[in-house]
Structure formats: C-alpha cells, structure tokens
Length: 191
Image (cartoon, rainbow, N blue to C red; front, side, top):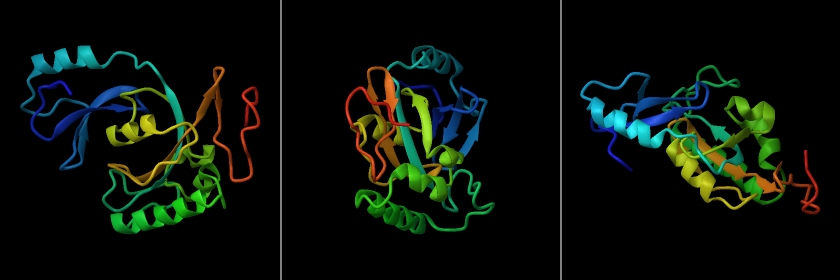
C-alpha cells in the first residue's frame, strides 16, 4: 500500500453511505472526515489521486453481522446498547455458521432476524461493490470468496461477520441458494 502521508495508526477508508473517503485510526477507533494533525498534505493529495479512482470489477455479497461492545457503533436496529463481548459475538456467529453450513438455514434467511446491520431487511444484501468501498478486512475476504461460498468469521471495526458472495451469470446477480434452493441452470435468475 502506498504511503498516504498520515500519522502512525491512521488509514484512509471509504464511507459507503456518503461515497467519500474518511480517516480511521484502528488503535483508538476514531474516525473523521478531515485529515488528522500531522498529515503530510502533499503526500496525501498524491495518494488520493492514485487511489480514489472508480473501482472496477464489482462483486455482490450478503453478510450477517454480530456487533459487540467494542464495535465502532455498538448499537443496532435490534439493540440500542450492545453490551456483549467480542468473544460472545464470535460464539454467537459460530453458532449461526454451523446452522448455515449444515443446510438448516441460508445466510440470507438468518440475516433477516439475527444480523445487527440494517441490511438485515434485505437478507443481508450489500449490493454490488468494488475494491476500496468496504472495510479492508471485509473486502479482502469477500473478493477472495468463490461465488456462493460462505466465509469463516471475519473481524472488522463494525463487529464480526459471515460473508457470502453472490454468483454472477450473464450479467445477472444470482442470490446464493437458500437451504432449500439450488441454482437450476445458467439461464435462471433466482430472486
């Protein structure tokens, strides 16, 4: 990764809601729109010019998020004040993972009731995204997944996730099969 000219511990991230870059300190979990004090503005401008082009090669994924008390925003549509530890969140997520892998339930179906992300109402669907649009840890795993594959537990500043990559066929995004569905043929589009 090129040097962005930021002080130690700071990195440039991308806000999906505002579609803008922001600055994040992984140690303190502080995020801000303005560069932190001590930034070399010339190096930052050069970095931004080279790294903020429109991403190519989008993928689409769904996720199930379990937040914990040390998450960036420890609240959700389900719970106004999340107090569980990270270890408890991981154990909850591992229980969900076991149900998904056994075929008992799909990630999307489970996300509707168990995810702490507002994407729960869309079966965890995050829509299409390119490189540089998600948190780095999330993005690395999502792009490494094979279509329909479900990740192991992924830790980010938002909490812990299971991620499932969608299948792309003939320009259509196919929702990963639920526990009772299979992809019938390449011409089908599952809703």
